[in-house]
Image 1 (tube, rainbow, N blue to C red):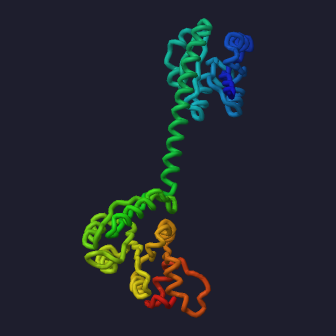
Image 2 (image 1 turned 45 degrees about the vertical axis):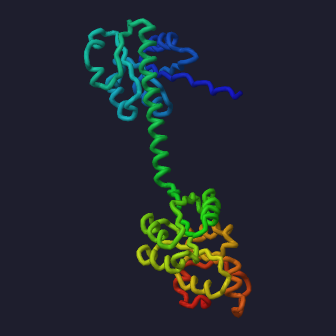
Length: 320
């Protein structure tokens, strides 16, 4: 078990031009909880306060060259919350309001007993610690708020799945629900079993990405694509198909869809979505081989295309 760090003693600066007074106060206050530092003029006090940290100041109001009132005013410019207790043997000074106007925290007679001085010091120092703790909490809160404001926002990527087969819809849903792409979680906000339902759902929810089966009972995925992109031109569509014919693939590739997969390769969906978020286009490896194996100079499977490159390419699916 780790030991707690011992608390540092409170440092108290005693300012009086009479050494005997300083020594007497030090003898009364010095302990394991309190460290007493003595100085004998206002100038020395200012120098100590510039170089070190103190939890309280006890000062005689009748100092040579610089009164305790003047010293307090100068200290307050830099240390507005530091407890400052004025000391005086003159009862009239103790009863006056000059110490309040100067900015002192309290005024005591030098005839007061030690217990009264200790109680007052404890109250003022405890209040200072409480304020400092509150300020640290507020500063941490501000830093957390700033860090949150400056950090990139991680949002959910909303998806709609369109497939006439329930087993396919729920299989894709299960494949994607636990996935994280580009630091974003994937959220399935809806599923549709036919083209008409898909169009209504997509136009209503405006998802980021649509996983769209090409073969639907009432219309083709191509027709669904045309209907939704007419009203949502920036929506991202990843086509799925069970077909293996080259003509179907070529028709799909005429679109501005961002992904093309066969249903035999749905495990590539998280990878495809990851690339879509990077503004790239994903092509099923089997489809790529089918489309490009006959092309001159074909050397490797082109799994993805830069989206900008694809947009500026020829309308022919085979001419990049």
